Image 1 (cartoon, rainbow, N blue to C red):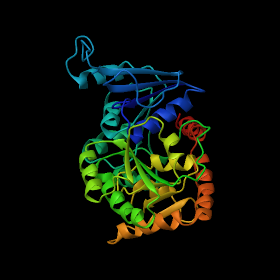
Image 2 (image 1 turned 90 degrees about the vertical axis):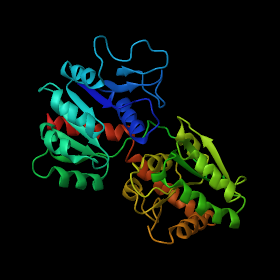
Image 3 (image 1 turned 30 degrees about the vertical axis):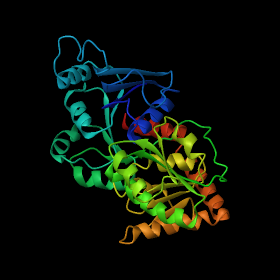
Image 4 (image 1 turned 90 degrees about the horizontal axis):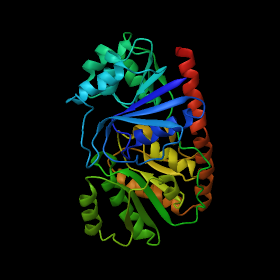
Length: 356
């Protein structure tokens, strides 16, 4: 079976890119898999791609490229729909609403068309108009499934849930003896890294031997660094930069923190659990709320007015109770096994088989 996955760009460090490439790598063990990146801004993807996965792009935006679009074409939309019309695959899976609409309009009739979605679209009109031409919508969480079912109502395809796929194991394992709290992802306002830094100021005051490591990058970096200076946390909070091996870095920590309120896919949460690290997260975040169970694999902090104090208290409670940390770590590992790449690939294959 030939499966094509379409990304706006397979070369970034977003959680949806990580999840999609993990899935592509796992599906390639039993299928012919290709990844189409609408835009190619650099030579190699940020995340690993298995040798069995074929990569191609619509727009070559690499520095020094002589031709941005394919020969004879001057618009991205034209280049994309011509590629879709000539596609020879059994299944095509898109990864955002704009791509799903294009596939619904232009992909050949005989191809099984699936939209992989994480959150409700900001502009629902085109989705409601064209998604009934698709064969299925697949979300990563039950919350997203409910949102999409409500959006599409009875006119659209059936909405299913298959969780994000972790990378192939074996995963690195935390020894739980480093006095490190870690967090990772894009440094953008919705992720709430400023709230995490302010909460950790309370932790650093009471437990000055613990450190916070922030992995990633983004437009918030300057503001976050200024906040660290303002709170005099330069000996406690470290900006570690980007890494394609976030699980390897999480394995050096004893706690992973997530202060996102909305829009979080939960990919970093699953990666932390795969390393046997308990997670402290805000209850209102979409992804963490689906995967973190207080007392089993982490702690969910209520989204209330005094959230910063509660988040700091949750961190301190785990810092002061190594036995509880190790108990939650065991639950985290059990959760991660259920989201392994092999298991998620089998669920996708079963879903595709039923749709065909």
